[in-house]
Amino acid sequence: MKCTSQLIVGAAAALFSLSAPAQMGPGGGMGGGMSGMGPGARGAVDCSKARNPQHCDDRQKALATCKNIRGAARQDCMSENMPAPDCSKSANPTRCAAMQSARTVCKGKYGQERRACMSEQKVPPPAGGTRGGGMGPGTAPAKP
Image 1 (tube, rainbow, N blue to C red):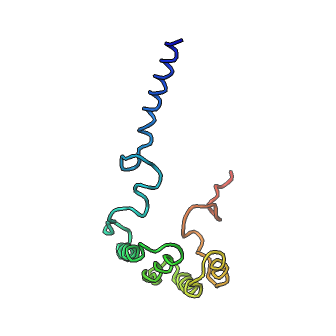
Image 2 (cartoon, rainbow, N blue to C red):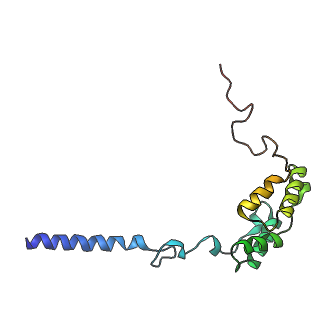
Image 3 (cartoon, rainbow, N blue to C red):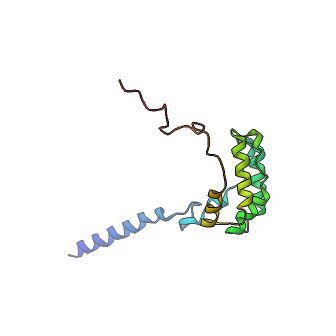
């Protein structure tokens, strides 16, 4: 009987010692969860590798300006510190301009109130096929 209890105690000790490394956090320290490197804790971003380096630079400046603000005030801060998109470079300049005016009209509204305001604005739908994917007309396989 004494041998069995020693075996159980030894197995329990081995089990607890094996579970400790699973508790290690992202930095190698104890604790898990969101305490390590999260989306807000990223290092410097190299905007020279971005698809649109100017937009990346503008976004990094806006993020730095608004870093201590949370909630709706952060949303306002980000939109005030980001330049408006250049609709002349857009795939659909008229839709881009309509979206810009809708955002201006609905500024300061959040949640359900903003969704209702945006749906009241007359913004044309995106042109078909510009985003790829889906099973739109002409993409279904032909039947033999």
